[in-house]
Length: 302
Image (cartoon, rainbow, N blue to C red; front, side, top):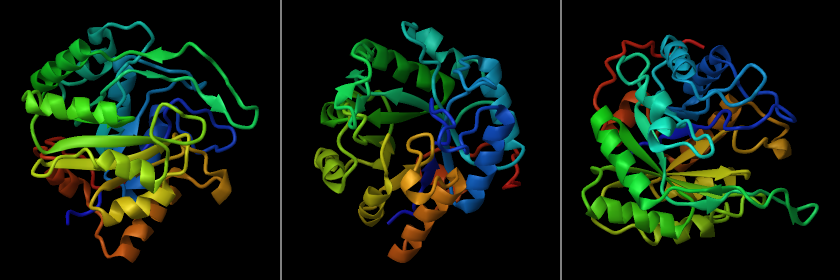
């Protein structure tokens, strides 16, 4: 069984109340990345933010984050695209494409959502939706264009699936030869607020895994948006998958609002109890079929 890749989702589009360990500035994101690398993380998915916590879709912001992270550690970078509402494919790609020419600022992965979804959040306490019109569209033509651009930019597609229909689309694109094995697939499960995804339970994960064909090289990761991934993490570790966690997905108030690094350490502890070693960033590169970074980044300096 491969070593366990631990990913961290430190910020997403999350505010700092009630957990203050949501990094916004490039320096804050770099500090958290190094702390999480120390704790066992080898991959980070993140969003550039303004100092006030708003979205910053500029290539300059993503370049600055990469520079600062790579001056501290060699964690693999899977930044969000600039997914502003109504953006064209090239507008959404601008932040990643605009940093790809420099080995220090370029990403390792191109993060792609493999379907369309209603992104409205449900309020379980009030028993109502908070919004009712947030539709996220990723049609087949968009996906195919992104696969072509991933090849041109020499980035590994990092394929997000909320449900079985998205997973089937991933496998269809694989059959069509639009990306290479080993595939990197993140199963984004959903907490009570996020109804677009399979529930954040072992059953929700297994429903996804049932559609992975034997004989194909798929390295899969499980995360939980707006929910606790830890109850699922133990199953994923035992089944040979990987785990992503972070306060960007869930504040973990039930655990006393731990930091991102403390959450990564919890996953590493689960792996140790299961007898599975945790991958270094270099080992994660090999697992996902990436070449050497060529950045000369520090091993870790938190």
